[in-house]
Amino acid sequence: MGAVDEAGIRITSRYAPDASVVFHRGNCLDLLRTLPARAARLIVTSPPYNLGKAYERRRPLDTYLAEQARVIAECDRVLADGGSICWQVGNHVAGGEVFPLDILLYPLFKRHGLALRNRIVWHFEHGLHCARRFSGRHETILWFTRPDYVFRLDPVRVPQKYPGKRHYKGPRAGQFSCHPLGKNPGDVWVIPNVKHNHVEKTLHPCQFPVELVERLVLALTDRGDLVLDPYMGVGSTAVAAVRHDRRTVGAETDPHYVRIARTRVRAAARGRLRTRPLGRPIYTPSARHAVARRPEAPTITGAPG
Ligand SMILES: C[S@@+](CC[C@H](N)C(=O)[O-])C[C@H]1O[C@@H](n2cnc3c(N)ncnc32)[C@H](O)[C@@H]1O
Image 1 (cartoon, rainbow, N blue to C red):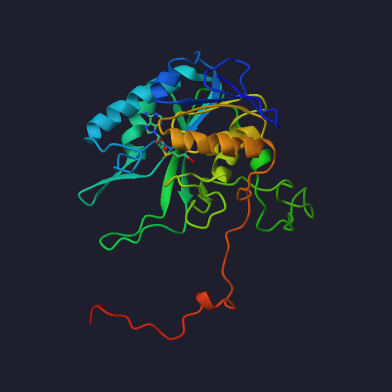
Image 2 (cartoon, helix red, strand yellow):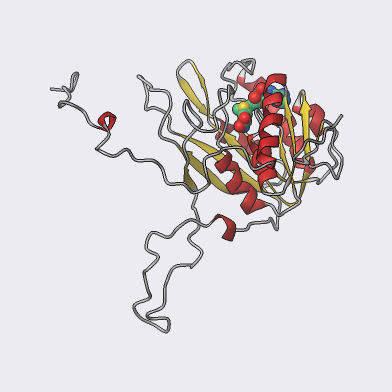
C-alpha cells in the first residue's frame, strides 16, 4: 500500500486524511469516488484533449464532453469551501477545424454554480508549425472557484517594470508608487512549454511545466491543504504541491507515468528535482550566438505582386 523512503515522504495508493501523497493507478473517476466531499482546496489538471495522443482514445466530441462532465461533477463534489478548480486546456482539432476546449467546457463548470475568476492565457514560443492556419502558441487555464475563495497574491508577485517610479504630486509625492513586493502577474503567463531540452522533460509527450502549477498552488492554497490532479501524468502537480508543503492526490491510467511520478516526487521531497524556477525570465538569444544570426537576407517567395 505505502512506502516511506529516506526523504520521509509516504506515497500511498488510497486516500486517507493524513496521507501526504496519494497516487492512484487507474481511472480518475474511481479515485474521485473514494474522496470525501469538500476535501480538496485546489484541483488543477490538464485532461486529454481528445486528439488521439498515445495516452488517449479519440472518440466523438460529444462522448468526450460527456466524460469530462462526469469528472467535473465529481471534482465539484470534492472541492472544499474556498477552493479552486484550474482546468488547463488547448484545442481539440478535427478535419483542420479548431474547437477551443475552454469554450466547450465552460458550461460544465457553470452548471455547478462555480464562478470563473480568470481565463488565464498561457503563452509559449515553441510548438508545431502550421501551414494552413497560424501556429498555436497559447493554451488557457479556466480558474473557477467557490464563493469566498482563497487568493494569496503576495507569494506570486512578479518584479515591477519601474520599481523606482514615485508619485509626482499629491499627499504621497516623492514616495514609491509601486507595491514593494512586486506586481500582480496578470492573466497572460509566458512560460516555456516542456519540449526537447527543457530541464523537466520526461518521456511524457504533454507535461505542463512545474512553475505553472507552483504559481497556482502558492496563490490558491495554504500549507497542509490538499491539491488534486485527476489526470496527473508524470506528477508535475504533485511535485509543485510537495515542494510547498501541500498534500496531494492524483490519478493516472498509464503505470509507466505513475512510476516516473513517484521518482520525481521523491526527488522533489529531497530537494533534488531540477525544475525551471518560477519567475525566471524567458531566454533571449544574443546576436553573438551563431544560431541567432542569419548569414544572408532571406528571399521571400510567394508574396503577392
Ligand atoms: C495531458 S496529460 C497530463 C500531463 C500532466 N499534466 C503532467 O504534467 O505530466 C493527460 C494524462 O491523463 C491520463 N489519462 C487519460 N485518461 C485518464 C483517466 N480516465 N484517468 C486518469 N488518467 C487519465 C493520460 O495517460 C495522460 O498522462
